[in-house]
Length: 238
Image 1 (cartoon, helix red, strand yellow):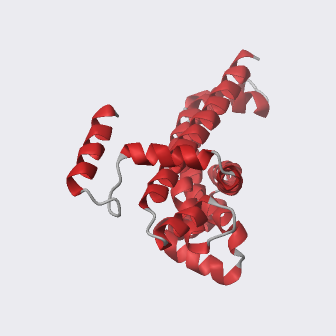
Image 2 (cartoon, rainbow, N blue to C red; image 1 turned 120 degrees about the horizontal axis):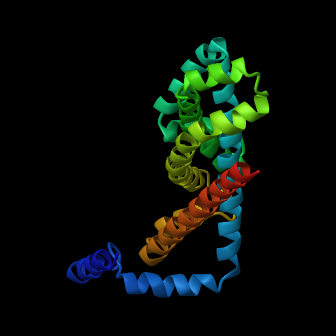
């Protein structure tokens, strides 16, 4: 980290044009100024609510659809073209199409949901299919209840796939969600602040808000994964 900050500082000194690249010191100073502004925290809260909401909705939907697809082949065949289309269509196309049909206020929720859903669905489906068939056969022979099968057989097998999917999907949700806000410009959002910085060629603000996105995304990821691991450990102890 220190090495790359030094590279950034040297590059800004060599270029010597704040319009193109400001020093990390200026970015930190500007970030300190933004922290004292009321709109700073409200913008973070609004974006966190929208992007986080879309992510959580996609997680729940992906788990449910993945479980149904693993249980019923017809469901998997029905969902396969839809998941392929969502993974293949560029994010910008989704954003433009969504703007034609919906308000920009909730655009980040929809885009985050669409980007995350295939990732969670695919990994949950793969996790369920990786479960040892011999263990399942033994559970049937001894007539182990479905709840215990899920807890002691499926959950340990699926959890690594689920955590891996969430790690990837969390970063994607913030990238896509903020991109949606930049294009849709909902009032009081991080994307709006980035767009304003771009319009006025305010490089310190642009980089300061970029740092904010990285920090908030990282914090949200650490918190969410920690809660999932904690819940899984509690289930194991019960």
